[in-house]
Image 1: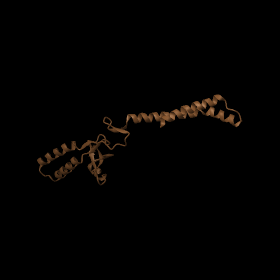
Image 2 (image 1 turned 120 degrees about the vertical axis):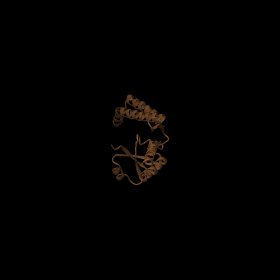
Image 3 (image 1 turned 30 degrees about the vertical axis):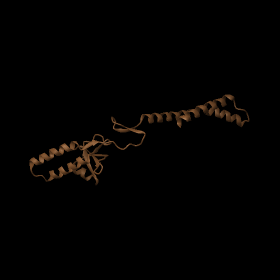
Image 4 (image 1 turned 90 degrees about the horizontal axis):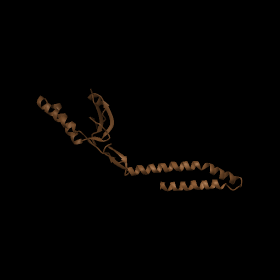
Length: 176
């Protein structure tokens, strides 16, 4: 049975995320120049190919192809197997920005807790402002209709608008 192989850049060792389960012949046909296939990847975002080990394996493979002596051939295959086990190493990709920190358990960049909390508070303040603006429509309509009729608006409606405006102003301060 063919194992799943992942495509990687032979200049950087970075795994692309593209994977395939196929014979060596089909893999070779589907391998762009400058790339190779690697087996055993558990998480392509947090692993990469160790290029020094990859170079040793390439040399061993070339030697195995030319080796005629059975005992030396077996020794070379055993050595190559040992190196293949060390081919994949942990990788921490570049940070997406100052607001992120590396989570070792998840092996991913995540938003720092303070940034996440700040964004959550901001989102809540915006939602609260929208609700308050929506709740001011009736009082606003009453004030405007009174003005159109040349009358003084009811004090209740004006007070309600002023209270809502104070609440909105307080929430806007949180957005700064």
